[in-house]
Image (tube, rainbow, N blue to C red):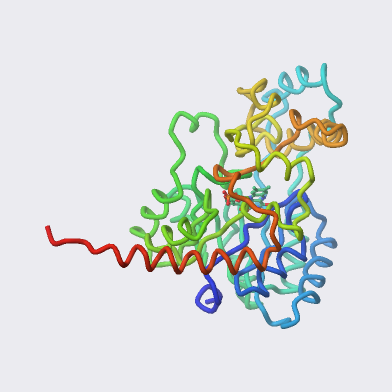
Amino acid sequence: MIIDDLRTPIVLAPMAGGPSTPELAAAVSAAGGLGFLAAGYLAAADLADRIVRTRALLSDSARPFGVNLFVPGAPTPREHFAPYLEGLGREFPLGEARFDTDDWDAKLDALVTEPVAVASFTFGCPSAREIARLRSVGTESWVTVTSVGEGRTALEAGADVLIAQGAEAGGHRATFVDRPADDAADPLSTLALLQLLTAATDHPVVATGGLATGAGIAAVLAAGAAAAQLGTAFLNCPEAGTAQLHRDALVIDAPTMLTRAFSGRRARGLRNRFILDHPDAPAAYPEIHYATGPLRKQARADGNADAVNLWAGQTHTLTSAVPAADLVRTLSAETKNALNLALSRTIQDC
Ligand SMILES: Cc1cc2nc3c(=O)[nH]c(=O)nc-3n(C[C@H](O)[C@H](O)[C@H](O)COP(=O)(O)O)c2cc1C
C-alpha cells in the first residue's frame, strides 16, 4: 500500500477552491509525504491538466500523489432554501442556486485515463463498482469519514484506507449526509474518532483535523493512525494558492466555528460577521454554494474578510509561511522528537 512506502507519514489535505495547486502537491510528495490535488469545483479537463502538471513537476515521476473528489449528493427542494436566499438577496449579489454533480462521471473517467496512486473522497462513498474500476488501473481508494458507521459503509464498498476527519478540521465536514437534525450531537474529535475506528477495523486509518505540529502528529501515530493529514498547516506555504485575505486572517488569534451560511454544507471557518448573521442557514449543497459565489467574489475583491469563507481548522494560528518541503521536513523531525520524548517517560508499575 502507498501508505507503507512513504518516507514520512504526512499527507497533504486536498483543499479545493484555490489553495490546492500542482506546485504544493508536488512539493509535499517530493519531500517524502503524500501530496494531493483537489478536484472539487474543477472541470474534468482542468483536473487532467493538473495531474499532468504535477507529474511534470516531480523530478521522480513515479513518486505517488493523490486526487480528491466530491461525491455528489441529491438536489434539495427549492422551498427548503428559498427563504434564506430571499433574505440574502436583499443585501448581496447572488448567483443561480443550481444543483450539479461536480462533473463526477467525467472526473472518474479522467482518473482512469490518467491514473494516480490514490483517489480520496469526501461527502460520501463511491460505489463498489467505482472503487473496483479505480483498483483495475492501480489506484487506491481512501474515503473520508466522520463516524464509525460511515467507516463501515466505506469498507463494505471496498475502500482501502479510511481518513478519520475530526471536528477540529478546517473546511467542509466529510459527513455522507449533512442533516441539521444531527447538529444536536457534538461531532467526534480527531482522537476520539481515530480510536473508535482503529478499534473497529484493521484497515489503515489516516487522522485529520487540528494537526499542525510534530507533537500532534506523534499523538495520532501513537493512537494507531497510519499517517496524519494536514490542511490548514499548509495554507500559508508559498506554493499554495491561498488568497492573501485568507493568509492574513489565519495568523490572527480568532475562533473558528461550524457554519452552513456560505455553502449549504457544514464547514469550519474563521468566525466572521456573515457566519454570525446566519446561524440557521439551511442544508442545501451545492445550491447555496453556487448562490453565494458572486457575494464571496465581491467581498474578496473589496478585501472584506467579513463576507468571505475563511476555511480554517482549530489550530490555524500555528501555520507558517515556509516552503512546503521545509514544513514537511520540520514536522517529520518534530514528530520523531515527540515520539522519543513520549517513550522516555517511564510508566511505573501500579
Ligand atoms: C481551505 C480548505 C479547503 C478544503 N477543501 C477540501 C476538499 O476539497 N476536499 C476534502 O476532502 N477536504 C477538504 N478540506 C478538509 C481537509 O481535507 C481536512 O479534513 C482538513 O484540512 C483537516 O483539518 P486541518 O485543516 O485542521 O488540518 C479542506 C480544508 C480547508 C482548510
